[in-house]
Length: 295
Image (cartoon, rainbow, N blue to C red; front, side, top):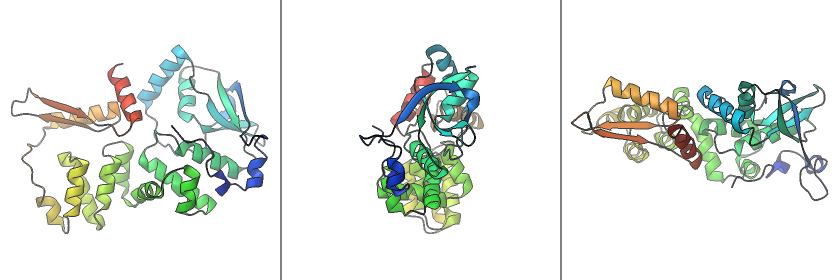
């Protein structure tokens, strides 16, 4: 179960400021109502950077048929007389595609930009469907904006110190590897294995090997442990796997884009036989894959 919003917010917002927005029972006062979509603006602090257009269309179709299952969370900006999204930009985009003029929202109190930033980042970082790079960038922004340590950050987001530290380390990887994590070409486990190699140029060589041979996380870890020079990566992990044809690689890429996760196609000596492996890294991933396959 996802931890409640606001765990550790006192580390970001002084207690007296939080108390102004809580009831006598200590819970945050939220207001629910319907407002015009045109009154809602995007979240300045949204960690998510990638929105799959095909999945947005699927969500829009679902909203047309069944309605919006979960309200969008917003805060009211009195100076601009509009509402800023705290969580639910993807749902709002889908509602727009569905042709809706107004949506149901939950209004969270935020008296300042500082509180709005804290609410937005913490709410979004506790979602399960952000990729690891989006999480890392969100963590980094919280630390910089509020000048807090990693230890304080773990209390704010409700994660273990090792989890936060490992996620932040992914930002040490070059941009192309970070992008491959965002598009799920490789998993977070692969990325952590690549980080085991101290030399930055060798990390890139190992990354290329992962893509070329579709190495598992375990294989990547084993290769990283034995890597001391470039020749080790090139020669120490020999396999008898035949190289994949351009057609097979093209189909893999197409399926990966369609399903939003890694896909591995293996053929036998008889090219009419083989297997298709679809990877998932969380129950959220699994549910999304099943939804696409059973559509």
